[in-house]
Picture 1: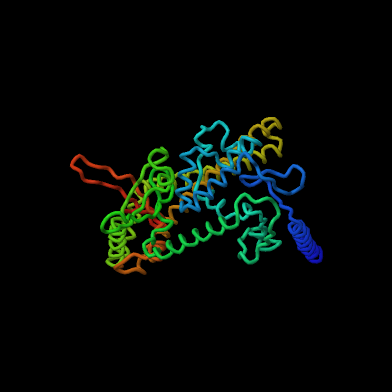
Picture 2 (picture 1 turned 135 degrees about the vertical axis):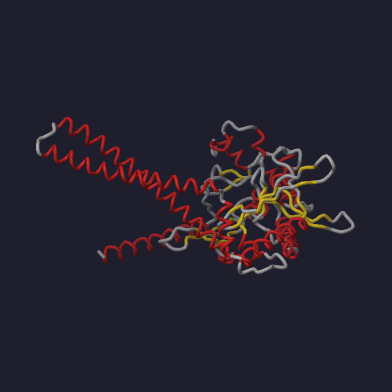
Length: 415
């Protein structure tokens, strides 16, 4: 048995090695493996595993790089492409080959032009457009573990001049330099982006984007909905959900300080408060589930006894075969339903017990930050799961009210 297992492992490893060698030989010869040609290209009609420029769509790629070289970032380019109703690569594939039908079939024409920042960024960094083929960006952890991981750039397999370029190397390099410069600027502003990954729009669920307003005498930072930011108010997908950084910072700090103080005063009282914030309905539901479980387990025991008695009656000839078959089917169906019900009720009650364990876990976390004087990315990511920003409401007297919901790790919304 051990020998067979070792032989199978060796064969799997050796097969993987041979496949890699064959692929590398293909790549070195300038061939590509792809399901769909990148935007601006089609499969070469004569040369196998090669690309040819698509005269119908290459203008989109040229437009994107032209905007980039003149200073537009990925977000601005996305907004322009959407406003100009430029079709996306996936939509073009759908119209030509019928792919992605589950996304586009029966949808409005507006979806055809729903560009995303990620799509634009991918195109701007793709060396395909200068005639190169880059392979091996990802790999499996091992021949046993098929999870994909990204390889360092120096390990990529790059083959130059495998097909006709759409963008000149000078333009491509200029755009890469501009992207790198923007990344440096964002890194320098990282101290004000401690909320990264935590902020969500209450209406569309997208992340919130960070920005800085430098038009006023005193510059200030803010967040607004990424969905809205990409398309603007004419895009119709969402609204701004604008919130100033300093306002958000002050509110979140105040709430964290409050809960930290509560933990310092009495962990036991805080635990009761957290469990109570999950609604008294939860306690009533737990009692009802426990009662249901007891009844189900009692009935299950009765059904088991009845089935045993039925079998004894049948085997001793006290009950006919027809009746035994009919009644046994009835009891077996009931037994199965009771087993499923008991399992479900036990799982629900276990989840209720886990609620208390989660609350204790969160208290232990917040005790690490006694009376915090400032917010840090570490503190926020330790204590908070997400912060949901609602659209502000302007009252008749001119005041601006805005709801901000904080969902803490393990315990959810407790404010």
